[in-house]
Image (cartoon, rainbow, N blue to C red; front, top):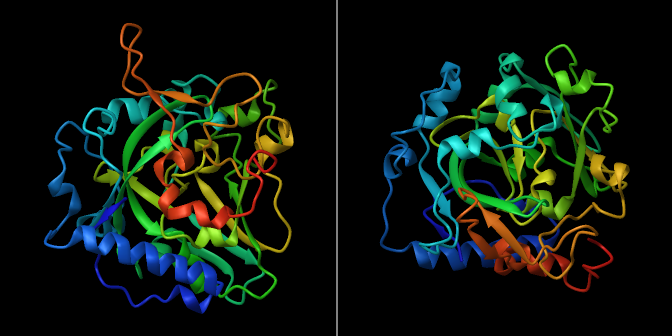
Length: 338
């Protein structure tokens, strides 16, 4: 169960969320509130974690202000031997971001070319309040939250990472979806001049990179739009300046460098589903009982690790977040809908 120390909010997801999902959220919030009783957190959440070895970033003034005002956090279920926060060097140096290359070190080597300021995001589709918005306009009305989540890659490696951002549900609420909105579709920036992987003749992705969620998944309180990590802004290689974090799904669902969020009626076809539908489904829920066609998903390599200490651990259903999210999939065949 998550431990959450929450700042009261005037948001009401019932305004845009089906009643069953709203009630699920209320049960979630009620459960974590009890665990948080007696705990206090004031000032920047990063002050309660050791980020002394994290290099100082270069965030714009508005983002530094938002990060400094972070007031509360949700904490991953904690096993002292397995759920330690990964060193910043691992989290920022071992990435999949094919826009900059296919090697795990390519994003850190090449993403410095990406210009992330200014940045705008288009919100469109089945909404009443769409348009193009500056990133700071996304952030300013909202309280930043720090979420310490497990990240599980479909390739069977994992880390624990502290993210900073705002719930995606807040953006969706402001967009005011129409009754036709059933899914949320996301796009990554297309700019081959800045993203060398997009101009590679060996690329297998039909750019832009596309991802999607069901509306109830997007509205779930765990789903985060991240603009920072480790008490600072996102490094480019981690999806700056705006990425999705959906901790109960495989990492490829957490799309990076987002430029478009569309509310749509039909289920989107995500990029990896388009490339190999028999290997990468739309849902991509972490499930140790459904193997990838080419490897087992029953275990994972928790980073940091080494040749002599592979740090192999058992994979948990929904990446350990089953108590919070399982009921969204009641009655759904998770082997067919992988």
